[in-house]
Length: 277
Image (tube, rainbow, N blue to C red):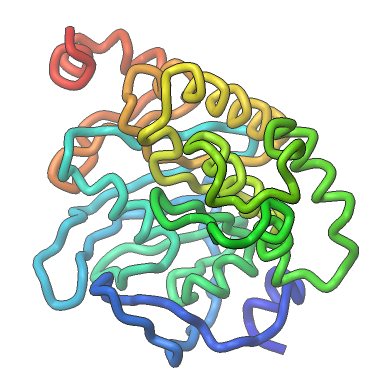
């Protein structure tokens, strides 16, 4: 049994990883996970601690960046374009190698795990784009999310349908025929099918209408209040801070401001620089 299976339970098969460690559009089917180490006393449930790194042999994009989230919380990452928000999320998920820093989840150091094994360890990750299988039905997309499981998924499937009733009504329809907001719901639902310990969302409201954005935020709040920690990158900074238990403002790949959503909303510099007044 592997380190990840010993630490987190046997959450799926041992297929080779299809992971892109350099972020350059190629597939690496051979990258293997390293060992899991111990966490640190007092750790949050998930933390990317002191992360520095970039893509391939290029310059660092992250500079001693720290992001964390506790159980039942919503933590948001905001900042200007090019600040490294999505890069920080990808670093936590293992999609680029860190030159410094570590990632720890639920009492374990998982820095050496590839993304596939981080899913098995409990990470549910929803990328901003290309996050559904458009030719498959909604139900088939959700079933694909349960690929690491070998138990009965019907209960989780019904929970997802209860959370997203608009998606439930179209379960036999091709996912590519849905609206942008509904496709995002399918993508989130597929991540939930893994029964993750933390849900990570990269700009979940990008390109959707304000009404749909509010609906998605309502669902994200419901997920977090059910006990599942949610970490998300969000371009709609003000709306994100309104629901955030913890907020991180990044500038040039480094932490510029950290606090609760309310604290940062009340911060004159944050409001003037990032929230338009």
